[in-house]
Length: 224
Ligand code: ADE
Image 1 (cartoon, rainbow, N blue to C red):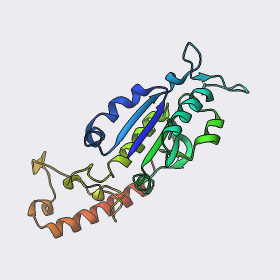
Image 2: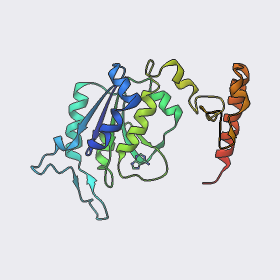
Image 3: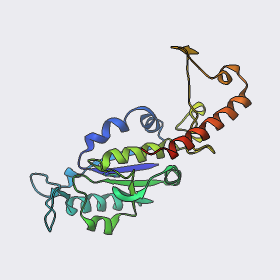
Image 4: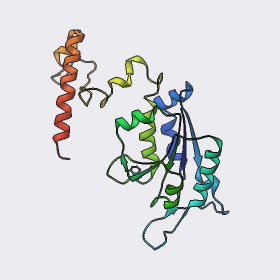
């Protein structure tokens, strides 16, 4: 899979995309993630990528020209299955959407910053608007990391058998993963559940399913 990300602050993306599983996926050639610095497409000599909103109001808006120019270049090079704009006004992201995106070949992400991007960019290029939740963060970069991570870990070969994405929370019938423990078997008087120490895989699987379900209903009923 190839993933392109357009951002005015690529530094935010660099570290998380080059660590852990995302790094491994790229090293193995399973995902190619390419960052595009919007400032490289600015048209003025001060490399401005934002401007004040027409009609007034607080915050700045990402200008259309650098985005048009970057998008035209990328779309001229290959076709994309989706051009995704990360925004709190988008459709709420979830595991099902991650599964769907993981089957695509080329994905293009646009990260907004400040107050957002000029609406004409959305009208002309964007095929999907995605939100990672009902709260506002400073830019789309952190949201892009969330979406990209959840998609790339699903690509065949990225995770080893022992880490299989099929047992991740939300992929199982129970909704959530069961609690996990490691050594020691007892700390400060708190013991690891007996069933996990016994080595009976059928009992362990049943216990995990049950715990996952219980945790799911507990958390989903709880008001934050
Ligand atoms: N940009 C700012 N807030 C966001 C959110 N909740 N989801 C996606 N992109 C965003």
